[in-house]
Image 1 (cartoon, one colour):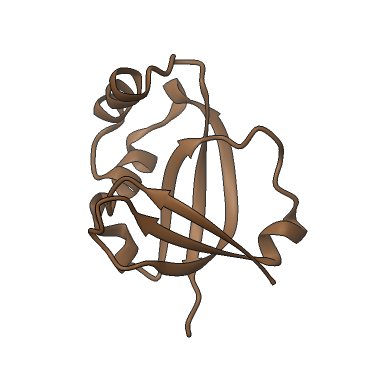
Image 2 (cartoon, rainbow, N blue to C red):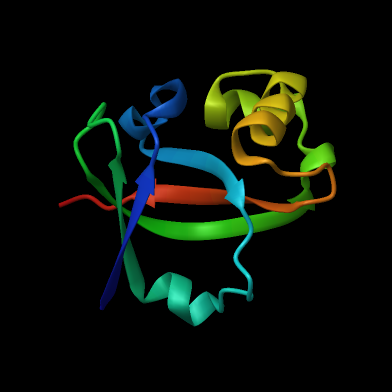
Length: 111
């Protein structure tokens, strides 16, 4: 089974304490085949060490432009309303409203 390491800036909304969680970030350039999702363990770390690494499976992802990110997605992912999230992405990452984002759905792997 393949392994990939992903680094979040921090443990947004304390989501890494949950068995299943979402994360909004840039969309991948190419689609991720279901076979890759099923055969890859994603180890998620935080740059600021706010949570120990967790091993997960990516269960799904949804693509949408930044301007379509709603509160129902931004609150569980980053603990903030969608307008604040969108402004943060524009200011901190220099993104534009039409930038394709992805909502990644992760489930921890029990070890």
